[in-house]
Length: 215
Image (cartoon, rainbow, N blue to C red; front, top):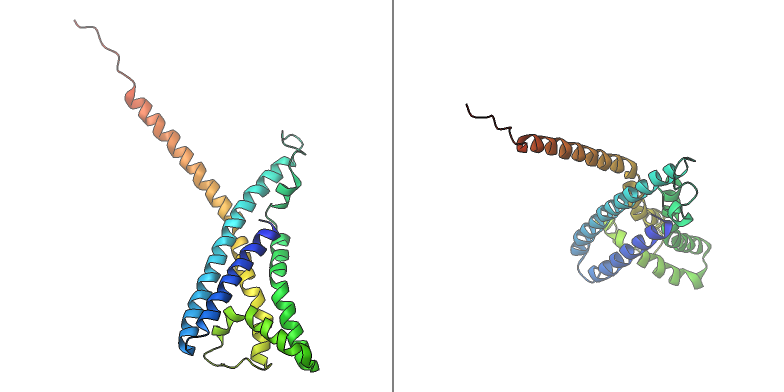
């Protein structure tokens, strides 16, 4: 996984959630709350699963990179930098989270700052932009809070926290990569051992018995 991979995945998921929630916004409050929470929960779960896939792939690349670092390896010094950049790394995961959260976080922070400083010309467009970017997460607070036309503590909390939720879900799955890789390698090794043992049994059964001379 690269930072770009995670950014594109999260951007597409966020875009789809925004479209869905803009449609649900036209329904009644209860429908938006229930359906919006279901969509958000599904998106977070899929982001986690996607992160697991990224992590598993990146862990396999990391093992290849580690082997290539051995001077005795035939691939020593021959790996492409792009391939090395896809190797599993906590730093890569954290940077990807920050890259995914950057735009909505900056827009939300700008709206909060302009509202506190009474910059009237910017408050309305920034409010609209931040509201749209955070649309997938408003159903979380709808049961207790149904107005978002002015800056409050709840609105500020949603704007500052929501940009990180999807990326962190992907990151949580990504962090499972080394464990998943070891499990899959162990399963493959056990499968090969079973196949060899089975083939030996089959060969023993099919060996023809030597015929004894009749007396």
